[in-house]
Amino acid sequence: MSERKVRVRFAPSPTGALHIGGVRTALYNYLFARQHGGDLIFRIEDTDSNRFVPGAEDYIIESFKWLGINFDEGVSFGGNYGPYRQSERRDIYKKYVQVLLDIGKAYIAFDTPEELDAKRKEIPNFQYDASTRLSMRNSLSMSKEEVDALIAEGKQYVVRFKIEPNEDVHVNDIIRGDVVINSSILDDKVLYKSADELPTYHLANIVDDHLMEVTHVIRGEEWLPSAPLHVLLYRAFGWADTMPEFAHLPLLLKPDGNGKLSKRDGDRLGFPVFPLEWHDPKTGEVSSGYRESGYLPEAVINFLALLGWNPGNDQEIMSLDELVKLFDLHRCSKAGAKFDYEKARWFNHEYILKKDDAEIAELFKPVLAANGVNVADYSDAYITSVVSLVKSRVNFVKELWEQARFFFVAPTSYAEKDIKKRWKEDTPAIMKELIEVLRGIEDFSSKPSEDIVIGWITEKQYHMGNVMNAFRLAVVGECKGPHMFDITELLGKEETIRRIEKAIEVLK
Image 1: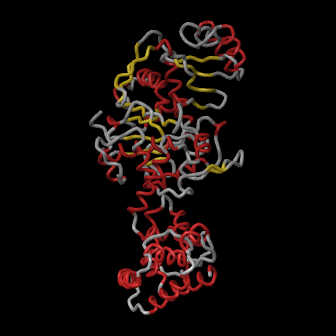
Image 2: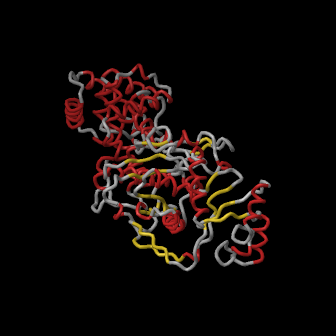
Image 3: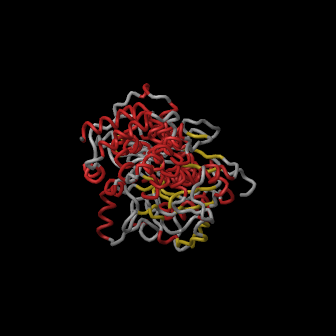
């Protein structure tokens, strides 16, 4: 195994939006491939034609583009092992179905859904296996002539894998160690359906992984029960030597209570479970996405990486390159990982702090425009300076407006609670004095202004808190915001004075 080039795959079904759990699986495959200088394949598993949803495939590709997870080959990326869409590989699968039939490892079954239902009623916990297969209608219980005649008549059938009972099947899992399952608890799974001439997931997966030379299968824990069947299929085909190594990732769990994370949990608690906003073409329902909710892709990647894996130290903030260096499947937990959406917000806050102010300013411009600000009226330098003063107070770029609106719109009303507390009878007179002090300041930048104003308050023996809070109330509209003299430096002398005059006029 060690001499083969590492090749891993992410193989979603185009049945709707990509769940955040699927994103994490793709991320772990990406980190593993990059760390070992290997390839990441993007395969579309669309053998279940009934569940196909238009637009889902494009949505999945767009999600990874936004997240910065790049594939080396596959659907829309090209490569030498195609086609990479399972619905385009029918003839390949048919050939391998025939191989299993020829060597007696599979058989044809004609049981109708009604006959199977009748059997389930007759036998509690009915399973189609070695103990029941001879009482059913299949090529093991019927003559070759009967089987050929039914096929010639166009009767629909399935091909089932013939599992030998009472054999311990070992699945060597990188995360879980040696998983042993007795074959008697497995049923004779359907591998192929004549109705649509397509294989089921089990056969298509094995054939594709083998032909695409996949060396490691890294997937969610929910696929662990099918791993023994996949091991048996590899053996049946005589491919045991090139069987990939398995790693079954821990489940993503609800933030509260027990069970798997679902879209319902996101709706209930107010967080997205999809990378991008999803418009369901069948129901018209719109589901929120991380991108549209204002998350930075780097923050989502960092947050997801730590759901079920840890780097072995206390480091939490890691770039994609750092994650590639540190990632180790052996450090994945076996237990499920609680989905802490508050932590996702914290990561977003940290990444906003890390990002260059000018970059955040670019992201802030559409928010300004949406709030009626003509962005062209302000220089990039001005908007960037505003961002640098307030970005430590927000988790999302869209929250900057609430923190910074007064830099763009002068207050026309003032916070009632702050007026009561800070605007006294003598305040207008003191504010008029302050205007004269401000007029006399030549260098209106933060530190020189502060020294002069504080000096004046001290000399006059005014109450420092009352004067400064009334000053802030007049300029901002409420007693909040960054350092007062950083605000006035940005607004400039004329605008600062205009605002104080306005407050005196309105508040009397």
